Length: 252
Ligand SMILES: Nc1ncnc2c1ncn2[C@@H]1O[C@H](COP(=O)(O)OP(=O)(O)OP(=O)(O)O)[C@@H](O)[C@H]1O
Image 1 (cartoon, rainbow, N blue to C red):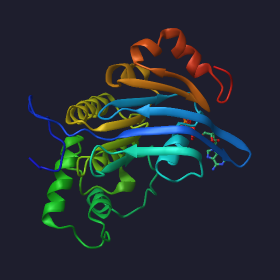
Image 2 (cartoon, rainbow, N blue to C red; image 1 turned 90 degrees about the vertical axis):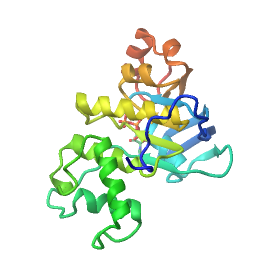
Image 3 (cartoon, rainbow, N blue to C red; image 1 turned 180 degrees about the vertical axis):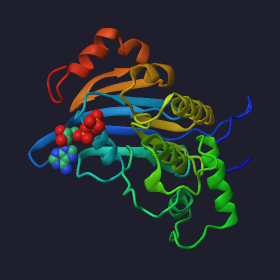
């Protein structure tokens, strides 16, 4: 058992809650496209907040604004309950050159240990990586080349990266897109473990059934906020149909 990897919290334990995330009138123009217009929403501490919407609706762009990678206007605040904690980000599936010689272990070690991939990782880092890979059902695959992994396996590796060490704020951009049934079950279990630990999770997702199961709140986004509230109230069958036949930027 590795202390860095999120484990179920024994009942009765006082959990340390993650931060609130506040987007206040955020707008973003890229080239001549108004990608986000006056977006305000609040992710409460220690909750799973899902963002859903059509392709091109601005979900990934909103995350890029949060990560400081897009020239937005308006304000974004991460309100930590005490001192700032750890933020993890799991991006949409990354593409790798099939010939890339880097192994899964090299890749994760370079990310978490902050040192070049040609230096072999310390034993403690190696143990943490192996434990994280086991958490995502990738035991025995540390020596595989990144370029030789399937899309779902790459997604699992990215999820493992997001767990080391356990985050206080986890930002997920369509983490389930390439996962099979088993991968989706692993993902859901990890989300539930992190939720019980008090992690704040901001989660871009297209699978509305998974959002209903896991999220405490959901925001519909298509350039502007279309709706915001508890999934059971907001994700009615009519709403779900309208959401994905909605053209980005059109009226709700
Ligand atoms: N660098 C850029 N320059 C101009 N337009 C951009 C740029 N990056 C993104 N866009 C546009 O911004 C809009 C929102 O893109 P974004 O990737 O945020 O949508 P999304 O909701 O995450 O979509 P998906 O569900 O397909 O992942 C799209 O119309 C996209 O073409």
